[in-house]
Amino acid sequence: MKDLLLKLLARKILQPFFQGLHWVALKGMNYGSANSPLVSGETELLRELEKELPDSPVIFDVGANTGQYARLVIELLSKIQPVLHLFEPDPKAYEKLVTQFSGYEKIIINNMAIGEEEGELNLYTDNTGAVDASLVKIPGDIRPAQPVKVSTLDSYCRKLDIQKIDFLKIDTEGYEIAVLRGAKRMLEHSGIERIQLEHGSLNSIVMNASLYHYHQLLPGFNLYHLKQDGVYPLRYEPRFEIYYNSNYYFKLKERK
Image (cartoon, rainbow, N blue to C red; front, side, top):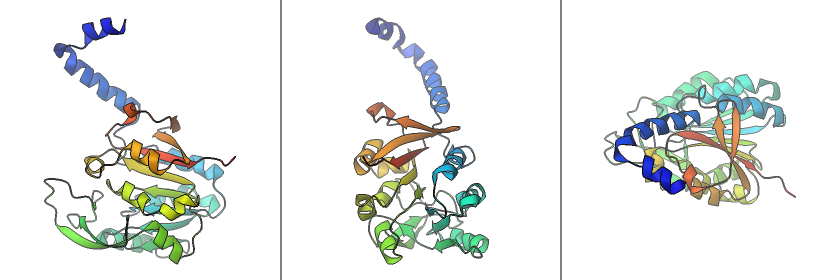
């Protein structure tokens, strides 16, 4: 039956039809929806986290931009009073964070990037606080390079004596895998319980990031994909290597 279907359907004339059907299927699975927390499924995940996180949870927002996600956290998790650590290397975006949140006692704002090693890297941006500023240099990118300070999650947590991150959100325009590689010590000691990250852009390809690589980096975590109404569990298979911007959620497995 399979061979018969292939013979009937796998034809040149039907390629445009199946490409359209494929696009509809991707949208139906919530791929290509990562541009805004309001439509990506992130809002629903925060509502679920409000029920399970402890009081005053430690939440890291790596790639905070101008605070779009931080405002959602403040609004949806107000009952449990989270302690928010915001990281943003773009100076103009950082200024907007300070303007909005400097009066909040439980928000720590950092003008730095988070990566695999401490030091300095180029941030590629048009210098307007744009959401697509990235440490990833892709072919043909003519945006000017701006040097920025880079730390690691391990170094930052060691300096502030942070033993546990209850929820780590990463949106760094393709640099997410480097952020996790800089959290080796925290991950090895189960110091990060939940991770949400964006994945699937051209930047991800340039960084050689894949779900397989995340699966290898996070063997003690269950993998989920964000949907509009919550998270959907995924058991890793190569067919889920879909490079169409979307959000994934990793939750530390319960210890036996």
